[in-house]
Amino acid sequence: SMMSWAGGWFFLMAAEIFNVGSRDFRLPGLGSYLQEAAHQGNTRAILYGLATLTLVIVALDQLVWRPMLAWSQRFRLDMVHDEDAPTSWFYDVLMDSSLMARFRRNWVRPLAERFDFWVLRRSQARMDRDQSRAGSNALAWLVLAATAALVGYGGWRAAGLLIQVPIHGWLQVALGIVATFLRVALALALTLAWTIPVGVAIGTNPRLARWLQPLAQLAASIPATALFPVFLAGLVSLAGGLNIAAVALMMAGTQWYLLFNVIAGASAIPRDLHFTAELMKIRGWERWKVFLLPSLFPYLITGSITASGGAWNASIVAEYAEFSGQTLKTVGAGSIIAEATASGNYPLLLAGTLAMVFTVVMVNRLVWRRLYTLAEDRFRMD
Image (cartoon, helix red, strand yellow):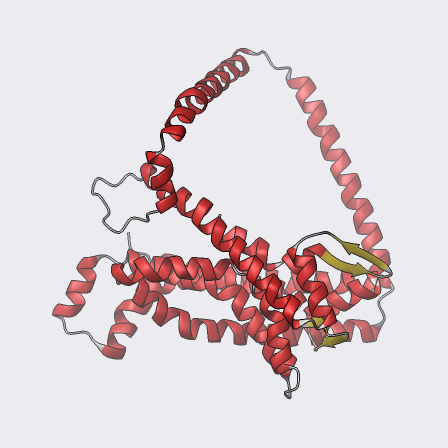
């Protein structure tokens, strides 16, 4: 839930203000404020927006997520108390509060009992009810026919749009897919280069994890798109500045998936294996080659699948940007989709979107699925 919430923050700016052709869609919020400040090149307003956003994220972390994480420890099935279990000062305050005790006694428990009674009564009524199979079958066929009609109509409209895309438009889409694929691969490689050693250090050291993991979770909640104008301001004057900024934004939006998976994998390695490696004097690169990397491989694949998908999504906001009254873009599938959306070129928008979906699906089937099967067969520790 925390990572999903962070993903929502990531697309805050793109979701609250965007153009489709001549139509301008705006919603009040921090995302639209930051986007407008970036469009005007107002650095002070950008910093104010970032400070406010950071304050909101820290408040949510301390007042919502940390207490929920500490409360979730009540549902663990471990027989041994975990000395490094997450804690929350706000959760402790709530648990020690007489007002909260009264609220739980007078409101939470009665509502929970009524809810349990309602669920049991509804389940019993459903079991006793004599359902008409003919009626349910007729309804199922009606829903199926309506769904097929909608899919057929949508396919017919989509085909009509795709026919309008000229040959040079399809060549532009193909070139954009290749360029974005290379950026995604580079962002993933750079992310793996730092998340593996850092994640192993955190996952194998409980004291370090106690301090750094909450900071990493907090940093993951700060949307990289809000920092993107700052990246552009520093890199736009350099050769290939937007390409560097695009890869940096892809990394910022995907690195946390890999880091937390590496931390989980490192912390899941049994202590017996660590002791055995020490007794056998397996150190240095050999320790990584025969012990750590094979143990982490399933977690690396899971994190890489999520991270690569996030990088493809991030390309839409990373390869096309408006800053200080200028439109900055580079060759890529994300740039094609963003520019087609802004100009109202619906045929090219559909072609670029379908090409990206097809590429992601094929990469998942031809690369990630095979690696995932390999991880399940050869590197799983039961």
